[in-house]
Length: 350
Image 1 (spheres, one colour):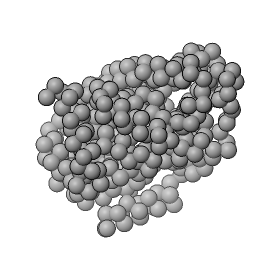
Image 2 (spheres, helix red, strand yellow; image 1 turned 60 degrees about the horizontal axis):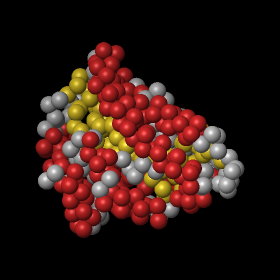
Image 3 (tube, one colour; image 1 turned 180 degrees about the vertical axis):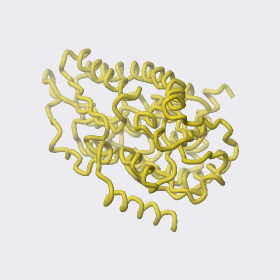
Image 4 (cartoon, helix red, strand yellow; image 1 turned 30 degrees about the vertical axis):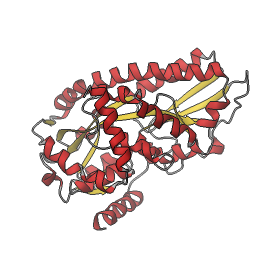
């Protein structure tokens, strides 16, 4: 309870003391602000691809490429407009608007879809994948296809089946983090999803749900002590200017997916549906390569630009062992966990 209270207090403090920007927009667009268009045959529609990733990182570049591809391949019958930096609201706000019928898309991790389809979040459990190569393979198993189909029935269409590599998530901090003991008592910025809040608590930290765009200032002012995110996003938000250590924990080989309203998808002409699916499949290939290629380059940039220490001495087994508490408290059924493990065993040839 104390940690949850701390998270709430920190959130309130940030709301009062910091100027919102990017993903911290305090005035997100409502569904009435979004082009509603029409999906009837032959009529052009506009879909706003709204996400919270920072401009300039590999993920955003790949999303821009996807938006351009769909617009081109549909001859303008679908126009995708891309909005980065959370200017249309945070992920929860965007996903809620999509669920309620807005002509929007998001590039969302499965944990953020938990309010609409809880089972998808198992793909975002700590240390689930051993490498990013497993992400697309799991999505193609019967288990992965079931999750995609059931999420669609729940109202959200994940165009790529939750198979895109978002990046390896690492911890940036003001001191080295080698074991969970090093995190005890630290204020740890986490996104507002249950899995990551539970992970921070499992490691002994106090989770603080602060917008990522406000995290730089929070670190600078000492409101939080550490943050985790994919390497590219950490650099794009200049976290290396305020945190001298990046600790290679690989606690998530993070998966994301291209999400839109299922009824809107079903209302599209069949050829447009296929173009969206094909372009999403292409997106998985080039975005995964772009993100993977970016990671080592960005680590080197952090060292060169700001003298960041790349800490590869993390006791990953200790971090992983402590993280198992998430499976005990999160609420996933044993049947779901067993199914997920079977899918992993399948792709690993075990």
